[in-house]
Length: 110
Image (cartoon, rainbow, N blue to C red; front, side, top):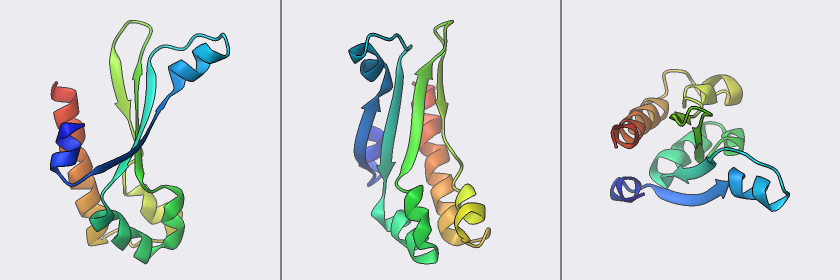
């Protein structure tokens, strides 16, 4: 969370899927969705393809497997190209990918 804020990234929401499952009497290993973004990066993507608002802000899910191992999954920003007509070589996609790689690398190093 501190690493995100220090890079100008806003955490818009957290969704605790395991807590939701527990509320209805079901079990789910730790599974949390994090919705985050940086308007300086997201806005140019939206300008290039407004339907990218379906996939922005960015999302990542952290989940714990049955063996206790924790994983982090996310769609690469390059998916915005095919899904929303943003040019594959758009600078904004390169910047988003670099930022996401740095952030997830820091998160996994901890």
